[in-house]
Length: 67
Image (cartoon, rainbow, N blue to C red):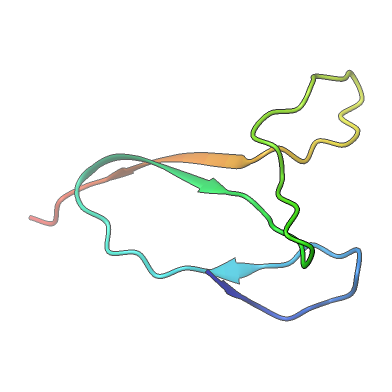
């Protein structure tokens, strides 16, 4: 992925990724890595207020074939 503008040390960072998707169900997963090589964990323990929710972000997509 290519990172977009850096808005500061504590800001979220947008990115873009070009993908030639084939038809069917796909799972897209985003996992951040910092400059020291630390990566987000796949899962984090549930907590009621949602603090430290930094697990991988997953999105399910269904790619349809063009007619």
